[in-house]
Amino acid sequence: MKRLIYVSFNPGRENWDKADKLLAEIGVTKFEHEISVTGIYSFTLEKGDIRIDKLINGLKKQNLGKPSLREERVYTKKEIDSAELLHLFITTYCGDGYNVYGTEFDKSNICTKCGSSGEVQKSDLIINKTEMGKKSIAITYNFEIVILDKLADILKENELTGYKLRPVRHYTDKMRNEPKLFQLVPTNTLPPTIPPTKIKKSDAYCSKCNKNGLYFDSELYYSRKDLKKICDFNNTYEYLGEKLTRGISHPRVIISQKAYQVLKQNKIKKMGVEPVNIVD
Image (cartoon, rainbow, N blue to C red; front, side):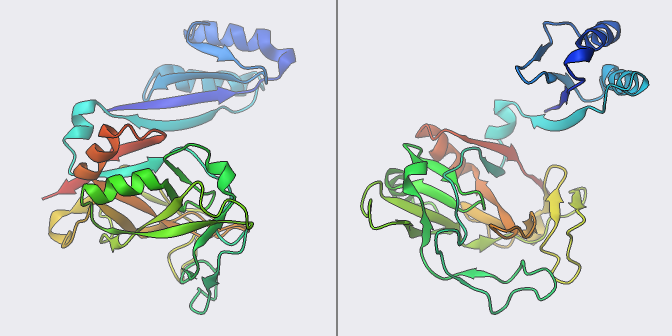
């Protein structure tokens, strides 16, 4: 596994010469970085590369701003294919979900402090189906999972466990039957993660429900003795994200190796996975 740092900064068009000179001095060539039409410099280095600190110091010294640093973990095929559980990332969207188009929620048990936890979806999910296009799987902006009927059939044929399917409705009377979409809802919840899992708390963190304002900041770790029940689709115990105008915090999805292989073998695109660590 490699830890990569995606670096980007915008010194302003008037400072491009200074930025080019700084990158040359610290050893980042033009072959390693590019300027987009917006004037943003971007490049990728491995975590720990001394050029990252040199860049930060150089930009500060010349008043060229502060770089954005985003870490991403990159795994080998062997690491992914040997993992018992995988953290699923769906990387394409199908528009608004939540109650933007009238999806009904039971709010009788929501947290009285942050209004995030305890909200339960009552009706079928309502979206603008045209935004799904031809995608087999996608998420709404509030992370509800939407799949095409063909993928729903594949999951059933392979007898995958730990989920239920709910019909997805179009927000108008048009397109009642096409495309036929379903909301995939994991039904099994895993126990809390254990250290060294790192969970960050944002300014919106709610100490009352502990389900608002949390973010995973590392790989996920579980104790095997705590994993009493594992299905092909699972929710994390932890809720991630924040209460927003168009949504609520939500659990992340953990899938089995079997589920991953089914998705991969059927060439389901726009998704990624990260191995989950199970400690004996």
